[in-house]
Length: 197
Image (cartoon, rainbow, N blue to C red; front, side):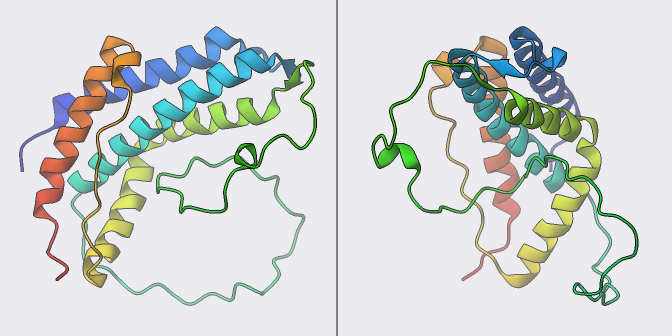
């Protein structure tokens, strides 16, 4: 496989800068209690686009990781209660695609008349901080995903399909180039995936 070190470094820096700028430009680093709906929609859409690129980047990094063979893990009892108080939950950025669920509420039509009041900023801040945390620990996340990919290959799972990112013409030039490069590099890297038939 080709050496992707320079591309991965450039893609990581570009995506990290874009994620950081998205939150800073919206003022999320100040931890406001309320933000306008317009800001929430704009920042949510931008984080969603960057989230797709971050997942693809970590997936490409995971495909480059060399792993030792799987070793069986010791068995643990999930239902056994641990002593001490419960830890506070932290937002988590999943690197695996989300399975399709029921139709979103906006497809069912309005249930109540929307108000023009500001909305809470906490969910958006938690999502932004989760992406920043993923960027901070990207090597560990890539190693974990590499283990999952190793299990998928051992189980004979089908090769993942990587479609191009839609609406790249709306993205800034640097992000659009990284998006196209990630798609091409992932398709090349997945050619080595064993056939499941």
